[in-house]
Image (cartoon, rainbow, N blue to C red; front, side):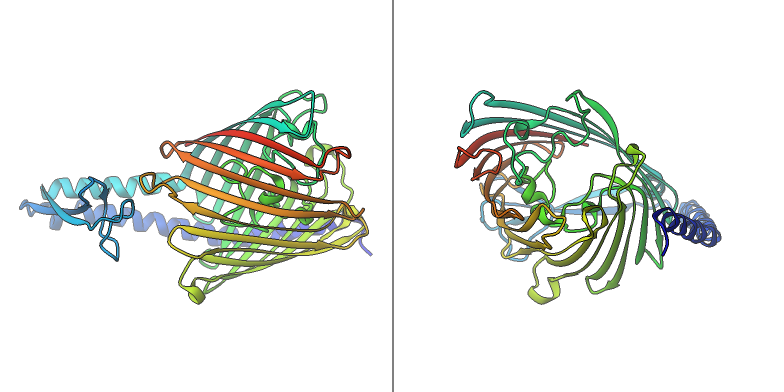
Amino acid sequence: MHTRSQKILIVFFALLSCIFFSQQIFIRKCLSEELKQNQLLRDLTSSQFTANTEDDVQQSTECICQNGHLQEQTVEHDKCDICGIKLKEIIHEKKLSRRENISERIEYVTEEVREKRFVFGFSGTGILQQILHGYGGHGFTAEGSADLLFIYRPFGNITLFLDLEGIGGNGPDEYIDSFSGLNDDAGDFQEENGGERLSVREAWCELSFFKNRLTLVMGKIDLTNYFDSNAVANDETTQFITSVFVNNATLEVPVNGPGIASTYEFGSGLYFGLGLQSSDDIESGRTHGMYGIGEIGINSYKLFDLEGNVRLWAKMNEGQAYNKGIGLSLDQQISESVFTFARYGINEKDGAEVKSAWSAGLEIHHPIPSRKDDAMSFAFGRTKTVDGNEELAVEMYYKFTINKYFAITPSLQTLFDPVGLNDRDVVTLAGLRTQLEF
């Protein structure tokens, strides 16, 4: 039987072999792409384009209703998405010289190449939470986080990713112990004394094969980016902040650490994924075992003609007495503006803290007709521990989208029978989250 160190070495050398034999393929393909781009630029500036100086007419179509709401094109039912009034088409014409048209095409090609090479992003989240009922002494908490994201593509099949994160504040979970979690954005990367800390949240390399059907990610990873995903409830910075609605509580994924995740797309919306990660953070310098998970999923668009996903996962945690569990994640669009979600998971009792958990809810897009980018959501769920305790969590929020960079989200959370407060049956919190992203 292989020791843990032997297992890690086997995986490491297998990855090195994979990279070595794929190197020539990557280089050939990248050189081919570069030749194609150069040929395109030569074609665009060749005499067959520049010799003709007659004008081109560029047409663009807008649609407008009586209330002045503009849309880029007519929808299928010819009615405004905001107020429902019939739309009227307006055609704009712009004359472009042949040379100006060529310049626009060259600029487009250049921008496309640049976007594939390097991308920088920033995300900042601030969350204020007021305990309205169920706990005394510390009624108000503030927490904030900031992420710097770097994506670099040296070749068409290789992507490098780095996420630097800083967090300040532990949120209400510092005072109210629960399995549901009242602020999933807080505290994960803080020092033991509560001080602020800048941490490498993720750092990985992604390789893609077979026309991007197969992807392989290696490095310090977050397995929840690849498993138990959900379109309605999966992001604490833009959706629900209660932890049991971000991911299933039975998943019990270790903190971000060294690991591998691989996904294969079969086509027609069907895929299969495998993940393997150390049970400990890479900075701890030790490991108590490995965490493995597999998932199969399918997009349900062809069944209902509406967007939706069904995902079934199974996991094994060597760091928790080889505990095993299975789970299901569903999200489904049921109308033009209403989306639903549901999750269920169950673990073996040995080694686990959570025996079973389920959650469900819905999301309504633009509930106020005049605010097209807003969203309102509601979720509820139950978590049962291996000790027999049960928690019921409820959350609702309204997301005011100010512009494509900034949003404000007031929320209301309620926990019934939190395990950490034996003398309190109900805890209620009001919250306000701000999100800046570009």
